[in-house]
Image 1 (spheres, rainbow, N blue to C red):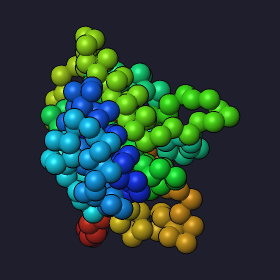
Image 2: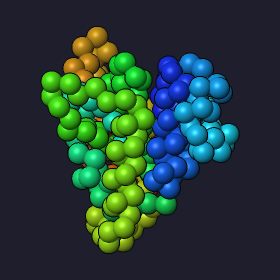
Image 3: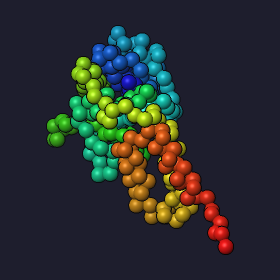
Image 4: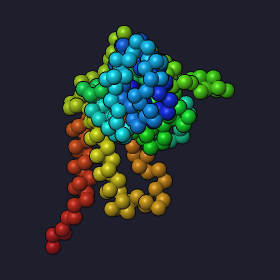
Length: 238
């Protein structure tokens, strides 16, 4: 499991998140374009988890942070009308651990003030929503990491049953799914099915559909092969 922090503005929150991770036994931290890192405030708040900060990876984009992942869960204090399926932390932990695949599980946390953008949530298979006080639902970043990491650790102690038994082929990775979405969008534009001036959230709805389906590599190859065949002009025989 990797924890991904996106555009964190306060270095102390990075250190506190590392401490929260280490108490639950998780060590892989990825930082996407942090405002300030490394920083003494991060070290101070990390306490005995400075080792996690020293081995943390810093990348420029969310796509880099998710490389090698099979399943991604983003966190949000706000429920979205159009987005990935929404789960409470305990339900999400059970679902993530039961997902077949050989790659990592990524837990993505957004900016302190604004959270994750809709485009960033489009990269996620699930949205984790912590059911807090509706009159004051603002959690500190490290507190949110602590809650989700605790639920993941608790779920690890329970028997895990795969969602659909043994998969016929490995699960499609995040990178492979992104190439599928690019292929779908190009085909939809070329055919006229997708009007770039009036998209009506088409690609976001397609992402939600395929993320919910959790394709394996055989299924993904079938779909991409079908799209390619439909894109290839066929000459009518006279």
